[in-house]
Length: 318
Image 1 (tube, rainbow, N blue to C red):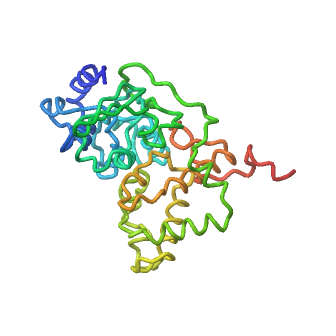
Image 2: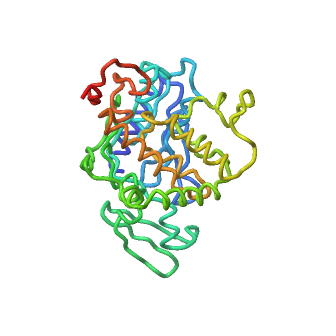
Image 3: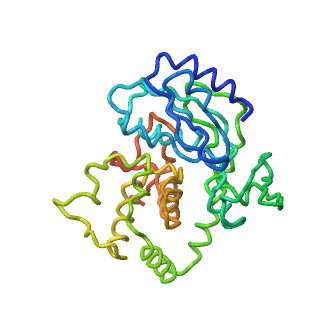
């Protein structure tokens, strides 16, 4: 990221008024980053912003409530999580300082592994925005970035951080709003029987580790989650198709109108279950019925969190 030095300087100036700034730092190798909690000037030098900054820093906000002044380095999709939390009055805008930039997409480790085998053998990766050059042993291969990036990046309408306090670098070009997710488009061409069989197979593989819930920045009711509740008891401890289906369908319904499609649930899933198919479907229904995109305006109220006698987009009288 060319504007990284400017970003670090902005954080350096703001840090005295903040308890912590959450961003990313280099992980155990060149292909991984991990969360960075900046509390001193020495920590600022560890900050990195690149195509491997996959973790959504907003996921840590639920652990930092209570009047703390928090700074966040956020991609466009990450910033929508913060806006949605502000809409639900779960955060106070005065407690937040957002550092933004234009995101050109992130790389997907699952796609890298499918293409090159065990990613631990990848020696280096260079990304010029259009192509990714990968060195594995004596082999060097150049692949279009679109073949290795996360699916969400192919149709991202909000690549630039929204409603931020500071912005560095140039804005990224957003995709047309009419562009649909190809995986969802192909899935919806299947018959109802085929779709049901597909999800039965996926739910059979689910181990109900709750990584999808724990990684989601919008899953804020973890102390009262149906997965933990014993009075009333919604789910059995048994890991079977019925209980897995029950959990995932309730999960997607609780996120309907709130999911910002950051993809953290699917990325965290150890079984590579395409959970985002459910999320994107429901987000599309909300867009069609209520003309609403989650997490784009802090002044809005999510449509399923309010009541209107007459919905402007629903002509039920006719």
